[in-house]
Image 1 (cartoon, rainbow, N blue to C red):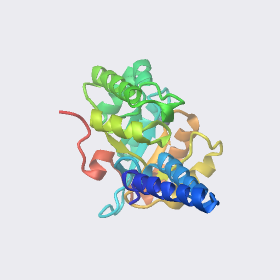
Image 2 (image 1 turned 30 degrees about the horizontal axis):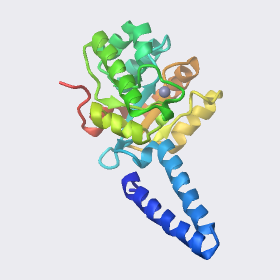
Image 3 (image 1 turned 30 degrees about the vertical axis):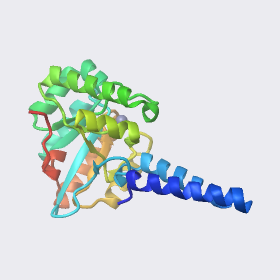
Image 4 (image 1 turned 180 degrees about the vertical axis):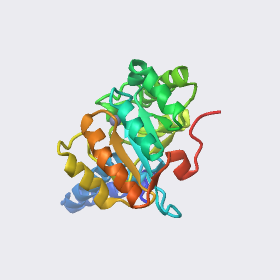
Length: 257
Ligand SMILES: [Zn+2]
């Protein structure tokens, strides 16, 4: 696996050599090639949570997961969470909800219902800031701790799972989770339900790529997603799939003791 800790020194040394070649050889082509590779790799690592480029991430179960998947829902709770829970119950599926602290404050009863019905809650920061990728370590820690405190006050559980907003990881996020001891959970199947307007396209995207062991990313924030689930869940059941929470899929501890 490609890792920032290994590649960063490599890029640094290669960059210095290429710079010297430029100074003494007269051509800076190699310097710009190394620079481009370093910037490209960093951007790819920041936006693709599956790479685990800056810190370890879980995003699917690779082996021994026949017929098992993990549905996950970000950015709630919201008024749509009730119907999502109703659908999950109807099929006896379990899911993981990565909740925003501010949303838990706005819809505390929904958060309690998620727990009461046997699903798992994870941390998705206090305010889901648009500039999350540019926050300093201290600010990421504050977002994580504030969200955990609200969830603990509301449902009596302190999540160990964290899904970064927009799936962004970088050195600040890596250091922050090392400090707060959160486990980063990504996804292997992205519905793009927050940006795709056509329900059929969302459904097809999820189903086309579906594999046992997948962690599937949805958002419990729109009627669109509820409608997709109404079609997807019976189909999953017919195909012999069950959905479990991420902790059950990966055999991880979901809350602090
Ligand atoms: Zn989000």
